[in-house]
Image (cartoon, rainbow, N blue to C red; front, side, top):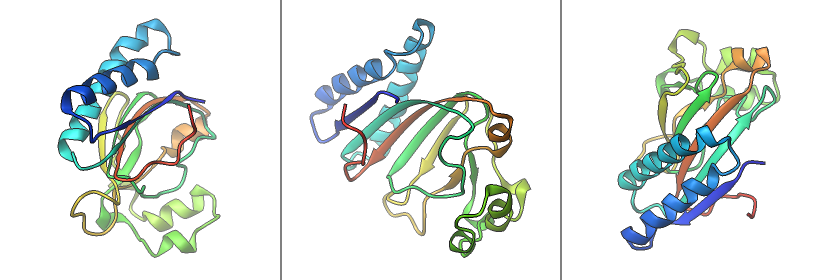
Length: 185
């Protein structure tokens, strides 16, 4: 299970910066030494960006995950957070689509179907899917983004990579107004 770090962002800026830096170093401690420095720097940069964009959010969660073909997010969805920043270091990035490309009525109607059946019903125009490459930074507005109209960005894990059985190495930095439901350290 990946290491997880959480921080309350209502503390002073100097203390918050120290805590974020410490969390970024802790979260990568289990990785090979060559990855620790770069991923820790990336995590810190993404956390800083999110905290500047939405300083009123109180929970910052940083995760490094190795996701295999049975990973989560195999279905189109939105998340209940303020914002998420992602970097996929190996394998393709998380797929995203704009609101106009989503048939929201199909979410309930396709529940329980395999993605081969539900995907084309939820997002009929496959060419509208944004498919970032490895090492791209993705910023997702969640359902709790301040002033958002509707829902957050609709996204999912890439199908083709899941079908090939590959693994993806991900850095996720989430910002939320409520305490996330995460495992205790």
